[in-house]
Length: 257
Ligand SMILES: [Zn+2]
Image (cartoon, rainbow, N blue to C red; front, top):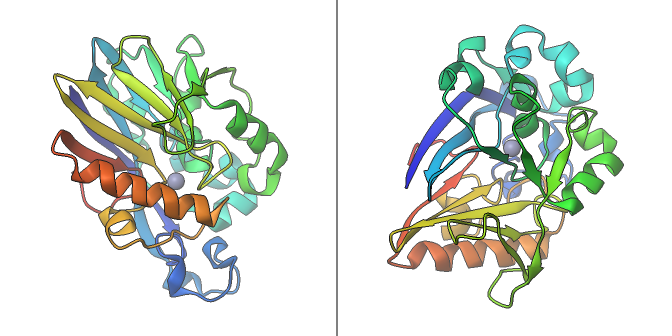
């Protein structure tokens, strides 16, 4: 198993995004009523994963368009809440330089995760949860229209008592990639467990912004369900403590693991 971190630039966000407790105002993560000079810069990562013979991209990071035409690409609302800071050479397509991708697995459909999809050909299947695709259509102020325009393959979840929220999917039927539905950061967020040779790694998307999220239980700003997020962070903490766990990767971790 090989997991390569691809940092597709940065985004300027409120300091309430990685840690909700820094502000008392519930919508603080949007940056409303805060000086832009007080924003913090967090990396926007996606991951190139080789596991069980599959070559996968987990999330797509910022597109070339986010560098070249950020306002037009995102629209004012999304641009205001999460302004991209990047060079076009940092987009995943440009960093991967034509390396093969069998499938793209989405943790969720926020703009800094779907933006880069448009740089990759339509023939590459893109997986997401049914709940997330439906939520992205409904919650327009959060998602804008960026999440549309792609035919997502819905992850066929089944009941699984060992999953953190009772739903899991052995994505390729060979045990190499297990998807878990986690209604935490968004209605249909997904965690992917990659397994090979008795070891596993977790790709948790925005279920946590660094190890502090699950080690100290720091709640991130944008939340769909706070209680679910607390339960999910506790689950990640238990997984991370397992001696077979090779790593936990989140999309905006300031540290490369
Ligand atoms: Zn994100």
